[in-house]
Each structure stands twice: as C-alpha cells, then as structure tokens.
Image 1 (cartoon, rainbow, N blue to C red):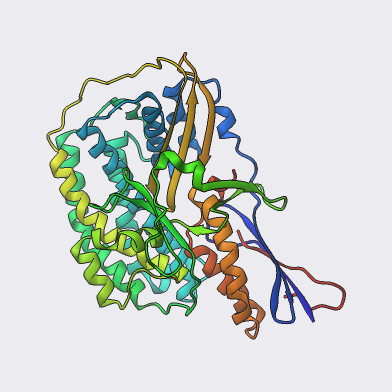
Image 2 (cartoon, rainbow, N blue to C red; image 1 turned 180 degrees about the vertical axis):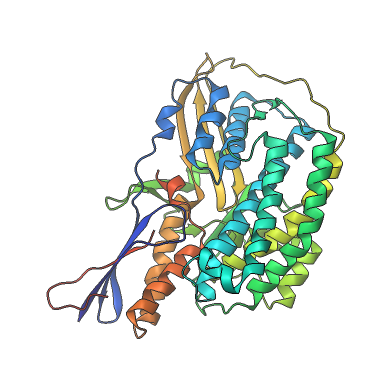
Amino acid sequence: MTTTISLSHITKIEGHATLSLRIERGRVAECELSSVEGSRYFEGLVKGRHFSEASEITSRICGICSCAHTIAAISAVENALGAKPSRQTLLLRELLMIGERIRSHATHLYFFALPDFVGCESALALLPKRRADVERALRLMKAGNAIISAVGGRDLHPVSATVGGFLKVPSQGDLESVARLLDAAVEDAVATARLFGELPLPGFSRPTQFMSLYNGRSYPLLSGGIRCSSPAGGVSARDFPPGDFHKFVSEYHEPHSTANFVVKDGKSYAVGALARANNNFRFLSREARSLAGECGFSFPSANPFANNFAQCLELVHYVGGAAGLCRELAGCRLEPLVAPRAGGACRGIAAVEVPRGVLWHEYELNSAGEIAFANIVTPTAQNLRNMQDDVAAFVPGLLKLPRGRIVLELEKLIRAYDPCFSCSTHFLKVKWLKPRGALVL
C-alpha cells in the first residue's frame, strides 16, 4: 500500500514550508521539504551599491537575525579590503551578537518549542497554566533587547555598527544598566536549562556532519576556522578556513523549493546550537557544562531534538558572560572610524555564528568600492537537506501512530532546528502524496 502525506502548514516557525512524503510498504519512497517563501533578491539588491551599504540593506533579510546579517556583511567587506577592526570594535560586535542570541533562543524555546512538549497549541495557550514560564521568557528577551538597543542603537536593524568600527558607542550608564539586567537573568537562564532538561526527548538520532566555527580557545561567535565533526562524533581532518568555503560547500536548487539546498562534499550537514555544542562543548562556561551533566545530556549528540537543550546551554553561557563583557566595555570611548577605501577589485568571505548556525556573506568589489557580486548562505538553507534526511529516517518509526500524532512529531522535529524560512529563501504543509485508493492523513 502506498500512503502519501502532505503537511501543508507548519506552525510555530519563522516563515513557511511544505513537506511532501510518499510511503510505500512502510518505507519512505519520496521526501521533499520545501520553502514556500517568496523570492527575496537581496543578493541582487546590493549589486552596484557602495560596500558601506551592504550591512544596512542585508540586515532587512530578517528582523530576528538583523544583527547577524549586519555583522556578517561588515566582516566580509573588511576581509575584502584587508581592514583590521580594533579590539574594542570586536568586543562591541560580539556583545551585539550575544544580545540577539539571547533574544532569539528565548523566543524559540518558549514560544515555538515548549508548547509542543506540554500539550499547548501556541504560546498564548501557555499563559493560563504556565504563566511563570512565559514571564521568564519575556525577561530573557528583554535582556537581549537591552543589549541590542545599547550597542546597536535600536532593537532591530542596528544602525551603530559599520565598516571600520562604530558610529556611536554605548554610554557607561547604559552598559551598567544592561549588566544589572543580565545579572538578574542568570537565574532565568539556568531555570530554562533545567526545564528543558526535564522534557522527554524523542529517542531518535541519525549520524550526520556537524559544522561550526572553531578556534580552539573559546566558544566562538566571530572568529575561527570551520570544523566539521564526523558522523561518529570525531573531528574530521578536513577543517578549513572560511575563505576556502567554495572548495567544500556547494549550493544547488530543487524545483520544488524557492530556497537553495547546501551540501558539504555532496552530503548533508547540520549547523546551529547542537553543532556548536558538539564541536565546542569544552569551551562552554563551567555552569553550562555542569547543567548538561545534571540533566543527563552528553555531547557530541546525533539527536536533532537535542538542539533545544543546546540552545539552553548557550543561554546560560552567554547571559553569564555578557554581564562581564558589559563591565569590561563600560569605559569605552568612540574611536576614530577607520574607513577603508577600495584600491582595486577584491573579494571577501566571512563566516559568523548566528542563532541558527553558520552564516556566510561573500562580496566582490570593483575598484570604485561598488559591489559587483554578492552571495549569502543562511543557516536554514544549510540545514534544509539535513532536515529532509532526518524526516525520511524519522517517519518509518511513526507510521503506527495516529495521523495527528505523526504530524505533531514531524513538526517537533523540524521546529527543533529553529528554522528561519524567511531567511532561507533564498510552515508545515505535510503532503501525503497518494494514488487512488491510498490513505490520506
């Protein structure tokens, strides 16, 4: 018997996607995960614009990840021009990215993931029974927003960061105020890890490659080479510098999707909090590592549902660390802006870690400093093929469940990746494809 499944509206994700499945004799014969977002054309929009405009324009790709696109664009342009930002500039950029990480993780964990595990349809349904959880989420989001506003100039689409430095730096009073918010948020971050550590984790894993930044000394945000762990959890010998991106990673298009798919050496791979924890666990804070053991989690892990708990560990790590970073920067002063000029045609690639994984920006500039070519590869585009492969491996173990439960479990799997399909175009319709007489779920 052939069963076709169409999941045509996946909720509680950022953006929209469709999943089409064909099951024949208990095996997956066809599995297509596709983004159905409209085309965004940002890579074309920046063409012909001055390099200083790249960060301002590309931050509009996504409100959730606007800081990430800003810093990735700036870093790629600086790499093209050979510009070296100051230590203070790098610390401010790191703090800005941490603010976005805290806000994004808190939003995903509480408002997208948690409802699945406690039997609620949405975050609004959480309020009557789990008001304390919702309030905890809002406090964490407030702390993240406070960082972004202080460093970036506003909550969304930061305006302070630019090529060569910052146009404005936060005042000592602002940084001290943010540090106090973060001190208070430590308890909320720890409570979040304990909450998600107690939730039942589906017993599913599939060996794959896990890609993240790695610098051998810290839990990286902005610097390092690219490390890919093997399916067995060991480290691949094929680590590579970000500038060699095209030697290992390639994009391709599927006719059923408006988003590109991305593979490394022809195979799917995962990026995101789980990949970062797998490759950099020993660089997490002591408290984060202790909580992992307390909650019974070990890394590396090949269970995609563990991405939720990996995000919890990052919350603990960054909320605790950001307060110290604020105090270190409290006396910062506006530095002279180093505005590099293009001396000829050049090209730069940057890889930064954003909430959902490695984000790539690539620019080619002409001698006038205008963008001749742009390429942006988002984390969700990189995860699409891996999500599709996970779904194909996960479905056979679900077929004896009621149809509503099958759809829920598939949505939980996809949501665990924290996908941003608006960025990737560049949620769940399941379509169970069926011939005549076949069962439609």
